[in-house]
Length: 481
Image (cartoon, rainbow, N blue to C red):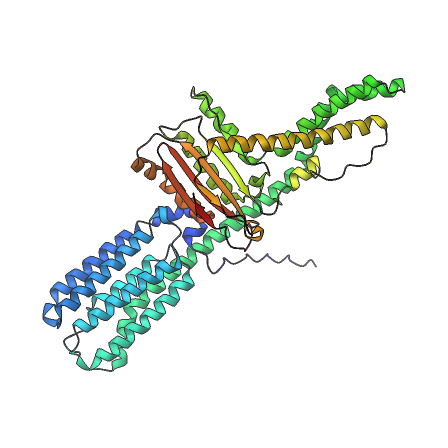
């Protein structure tokens, strides 16, 4: 009798996750919910206040209550803008605090004259504001904010109960008032929890499928690398080795030929090892620009290959931004510069490179014959010289193309050890309004997957700078120059 294999449990989504953070592109589609809710809240408050003038004791306080609620609605619309993503906890607390203030002012303006709790605009407005937070904030946070607001509303209703037209249990008035807040709050929290769990399940399944596919293709990839190596060696190296073995002797010309072959082989292998997904992306864009009849000059400055440390979301965000820049009207094809700098730990996701070519900088296996030792020694010396020359050339190119704008304070190595800074520069001859409109969706995605996104526009040069955190240490201090 065979035992059934238990189904692996899916990992739960983190408590701080929200739809906007897990799915920035999907978050763009739901952000119009904020202005729609804001219009409903403001309209209802104005109409309700105008229809209850006979219940208002202090007109100035009632007007202040409506004004504060309008400010809360405006803050909601501003905070939900895609170019200001992500929606932070501080913004949510400020919006809710403004709504509670509007509720207290409205209650004070109708004190002793309020006839019913059901037609007060503030509890319903507060509930709708909390409902609008569903795509932007975690469901637990929405519940905590909603519960706190409901408690304040309920206590206010209890205090007003002796002066209401209908005489019944004071607790009933509190329940009615709290329901107007709790019902939208629970709906928003349920929506946030369900969407976040669905996105998290989809991402987990997608990553699992990618890992399975990678494992399945690893053998084929390794075999293709071996075949490629043999092809390169078979053209020159293997015939040379066979000739030396047949002669049984090693001449000065053979040593010179061995060094030349070692240099050629090492140059090919180093070029393949140093090639990253960012190089592939820029190569594709160069080809696309060339097919459009342009002469591209796209520069990558990543001497430490930090691009290999980006996760899939970060790679997708950077790739989408670069493609969008290259396709914008007014883009200068000779102006694109991409630099990745920092002092963090070396990237760790290079297992596929290690399997194919070995660790860079690792000790070589002791050679068994003089010719092989000559090849290895010459290859190591040439690779070191080439790496130093490449780093100097990339630094000179970036220094010539980057205006003095910001200086990073490097006094603390612990701070810089956790942050990689990505800088993208491009010349785009477009008005500022059109630039912002074209970049707004991409900036919202960048702010969701990176930290400290900064945009500098000095027509026609556009500079985007953002950080990829690799640890828990704080980000570097920035000084304006």
